[in-house]
Image: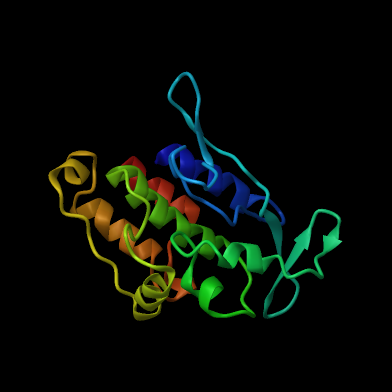
Length: 182
């Protein structure tokens, strides 16, 4: 988990920051792409930067741009389909853009996925997931395996902070790294 957070920390510290936009670690049995690779020495690395964009603050509203310049296409629609990992402000507001905070929300989802071995919201429909996101409903996994893998009270508190409905109240990638290293 620290390696993944450090990858985001690096990307978000660039000028302008790079937003991954599609964090998830589903197994090969799912139809979705795995975005976390593990090296021979056990280090985790971020991959699949197909939805990544630079994040530029050019006005009070965040603007998206590719490395070639501003994007006029609604790339957000591809990201909207990712209900299990996506931040509520992105999924529920068609005018929202991905930000470092939306990556942090997805990182919280990814942590639970890695600690439980299940995709977020297993068994729920997209409609039910949207309702849960809009209501800020997060069900803590309580099985012994998840707890044994590190989903203790301190980790759960960090995950819930990553899922704050207010993007401005989510921790930065650097803050997540610091907390994970404790």
